[in-house]
Image 1 (cartoon, helix red, strand yellow):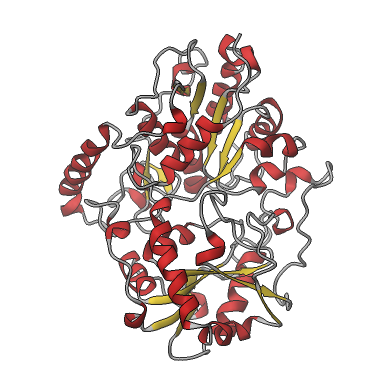
Image 2 (cartoon, one colour; image 1 turned 90 degrees about the vertical axis):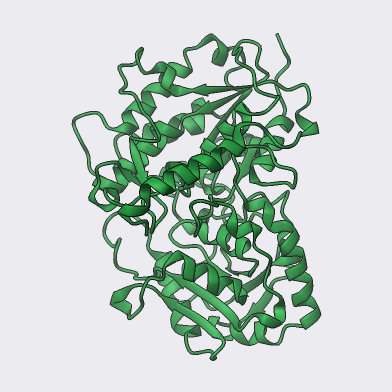
Length: 473
């Protein structure tokens, strides 16, 4: 946690880091000839009577959870992170990278691609939900402001030229659930914006749409921005060398919140928490080299500082990667940043972002559990019946695997046997996975500019440039 006395220094340190990202450090050949316009939806504020939104002052990021809250929330009043270090700040990094590249244009009419930069209003809305809960208000909420900006967007001649087929949306959060603004926004994403490219945290965000098959052709699943243990050096975790295999003293590591009752009766699925609880109980006493437990105090656990979490993951050979109440998790980004071999337990498996660009099969382990004690029956539905589709954003039945793994998954009867399978894995195979991971992990780093070694932003921007565009008119 950041103390009050350090805040001024931290701001200066981060500001110094940002200076590095003014211009891109590399080129993307696939983007040659493409011109991209960053359309900040704040331009519609006066027209739509929307209040101004400033990402540096409207909300703040909690240094413990890495999620945003309203700027005056007691949880972030005295200690907070800059907004661009939050786990949902991917859209900000992308906007900065485009603006600092040779592919940016300030001419909306001449742009080949339009990136809809709704990050500030979107995160303001998310902060409102975190600070106030899922309350219904008569007065306008940030979600209403975002909806107004979308309604103004589709009235522009530039949108209507190709019905949005050359536009890009970046939705960094798995879903709000239900509420006054939520369902209209989901409806616009699924229907009005169906021709656009969609960048999301997990496939189920668009699998709930009737037009999923059309949208899937221009769909990119991306990771969350990993947390940092050094504010002055946000990329320190990726710059540290991977710990050699013979120096790792933890065989298997896992920490998570898993109290299954905290969301009961509030309209959300809690099966992910139940599953995590079941795994923690089954593996918690599997050996002195197994460090698996829940962090909930009610279950006898305790939260760890992020620095301690990263230290343990760097010293672990394997780290469990399991879905919670949604398919995606920031812990995967941090597992890969630490150089720990991810162990995907399912099905359904946790989201595997950028699957066409990341070699998960080579550096990960997949466990197929046949005993679903405490977990939902696996249905893996590619399509959902129209009458129930809107209610399944967070339902594991809609979590489609991003990588084909059935041919390499280790099949086991129950969770308790996971440790044994990992303990006796061939040493050469483990070393191969660690070597591959050391090469691949840079792809999960987020930087506000195009990098030399491929980072998450390089992959995202390359995918944008590679999308099929409508003929010019």
